[in-house]
Image 1 (cartoon, rainbow, N blue to C red):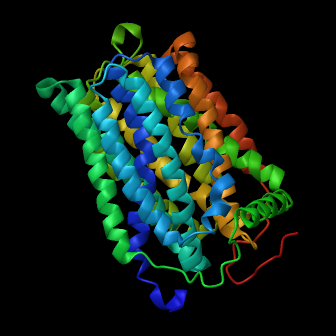
Image 2 (cartoon, rainbow, N blue to C red):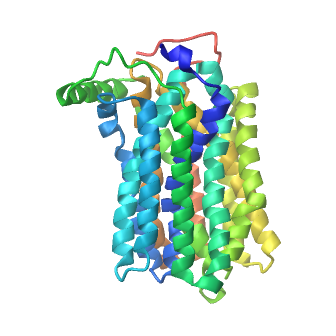
Length: 429
């Protein structure tokens, strides 16, 4: 049976695949931050280690070629979802142990490898089975689904953890959350066994490790030969740099006592802020961002997408400067930021998909682009805890705003290789 014969409706699997991508990433990068701080780990230690274990999302192109040697993209999507479910369960079991931080961080490192592999295979399915028109059509839903995972993990599950902490204790509360994540990933794996389309691999070009290494070198060589690739790398690194600084510190800032410059929210309040209106704003922003790009064109809309993505960080500076007591005011700042995040993020994803990935090695080059993007996110995250400890929250959020300026400049001047028109194709050297 050919690949075209076994395509199911993308609406049945695009949201679930990208939800499955988002959950492990956000569980490590955001939810674990609150979990560890409630269990007595220092801010700088949390920011460094929860950022370092995310390095597989940056290195994932190094093993993307080897995935072509075995099975299908569908196999790796399903396998990594089930593996991630098992790892979440092991993380839950590690939390009551004396050296829980060491064990849980090690397991998160393996979880990150599984999640990064899932990203390669999931993006491969998306690129293989959707044409350019469908890619643009579903990019908003892709981003919305990824962001729903973010809201569920950093909002709804954190709210549940906060509710449970007072009744069963911190450790038991977070064990429940990790077990919920495990069940979700296992359920996704079972669902995708049935619903995900499978490509025809009867003419596999990579069959040995030597072939994979040769193919990897070819992918790397041709990636860096792409037109404007240097500028494009700078663009995708800088676009998320301010977010990389802020993402670890915002929940710590919301949680920290008011006498040290924080807002003194409970874990339950933080979950409520992220998980209610923030949830709706995130999803609406992602979907509207996709439709906005479709109607205006990526090139014309890019500066507006940057603005939506970066300007809302002003809200966190204002919160740090005035430290309001009102949960409504705090929540409003989070809602605006989350709407902007959803609206602006889809532009970066579509840029990588349609300006960097096209060519002979589309899936691998897209993996390279997303890996570089994650590097731009990871490096600022690693130092964010130290910076906030040294400077205090108010000054730290000024640094975040300064970090948006280089992103603005590269967004204004970034060159396009391919036009927005779906009917015209300009071949890049």
